[in-house]
Length: 140
Ligand code: HEC
Picture 1 (cartoon, rainbow, N blue to C red):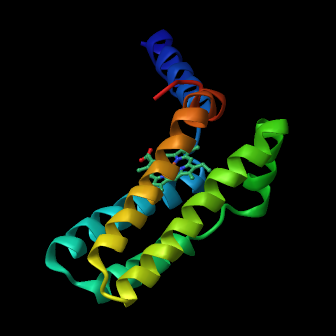
Picture 2 (cartoon, rainbow, N blue to C red):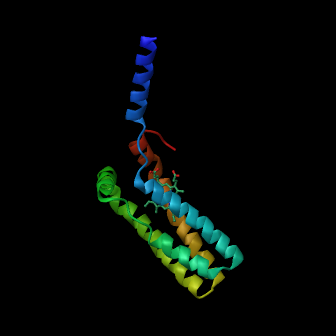
Picture 3 (cartoon, helix red, strand yellow):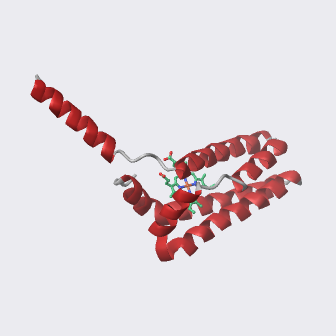
């Protein structure tokens, strides 16, 4: 019995040590994903006020806290410029989408939405596998 408890405690301890806490960035990303769904729904309903509001939220998403930023920057190394440019691309597209929604120009909203999603995908394809491997020890 004692041995068994020792084993269980050991396992628990090991699990706690190895299970990496999700980064704040992951919460930011989940929120971006949700907001993209809201935009899709807004386009279907031609609810341009909702699209404009949500586009601003996408474009002005919160940043990772400073200590996490340092971890990300040191992981990215010389790729940081590229990582940042993908981020800039999505901010620009979100801004364009907000303007198009303000003009109630559905076609332009969709064009900007495509540009936005292309930016998300480009960063994910380029960086996500190595990123999750590094921070969580697994590829998603
Ligand atoms: C500059 C790079 C970059 C850009 C641009 C980017 N992402 Fe991400 N995204 C990441 C990284 C890195 C992860 C993995 C984060 C993690 O698991 O901690 C991620 C993960 C995600 C996830 C999965 C979160 C989860 O539940 O594990 C979603 C959803 C997501 N991003 C949505 C978006 C959307 C929508 C956009 C565009 C509006 C976007 N991302 C733009 C880098 C980016």
